[in-house]
Length: 262
Ligand SMILES: [Zn+2]
Ligand SMILES: [Zn+2]
Image (cartoon, rainbow, N blue to C red; front, top):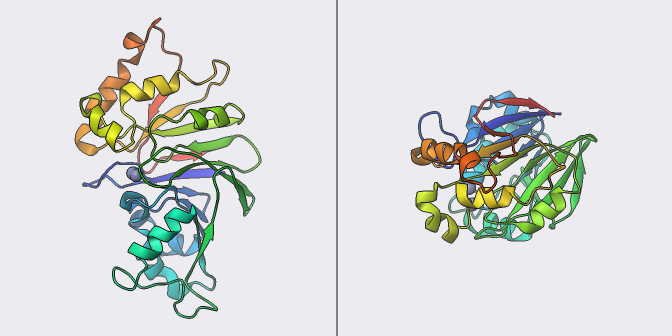
């Protein structure tokens, strides 16, 4: 299973694209502005979109992508999300004001998109992948995902603050790599707390919850562009700041364009 990072930034700027991952050629996890790096043919090949939540940085390119490729597709693009996320998309984006309601266009019998409600803890099986909705703690209904092609999982937290239920489930999974958000620096930890995101300080206490026997590479995502260097510096000091010294985790930086074989 291939995982291509299309976007992993917390905001936009030149070379900064917001959250989206392409699994093999036909599944998107989130549809942030990184989707704009796909060619028309690559966009046409996407049949399934799994959304973590309704925030714009995770859905911004979805309506534009549908418009770009719908006329070339023969089946509806399937969008999987929590009920609250689907309700938000219908009310605020595909509402015939911000964008056409492509769930009834060109006809209700054969629309360009279809919505598929998922529940926390549910596993959806599509094109040989098992995709499980994992707990997330955010300001709107939200999930993370684990994706497996039968072997070890690629795991993404989505947007979240401290999340003990997530770590409890992770202990039961065979994790190949974890992508975890750290949206703000410790300087902005109050903003992180209010907006239910992680900062390096809360990230450190979350990583403390990982069972010692579970070792996997951890990739940091969703940093705000103005704060990325600061966040990286604060995380680089983990080894010194954590009680007991020697930091046990393998932490790396995620970059748009990276391709992982999981
Ligand atoms: Zn969010
Ligand atoms: Zn976000």
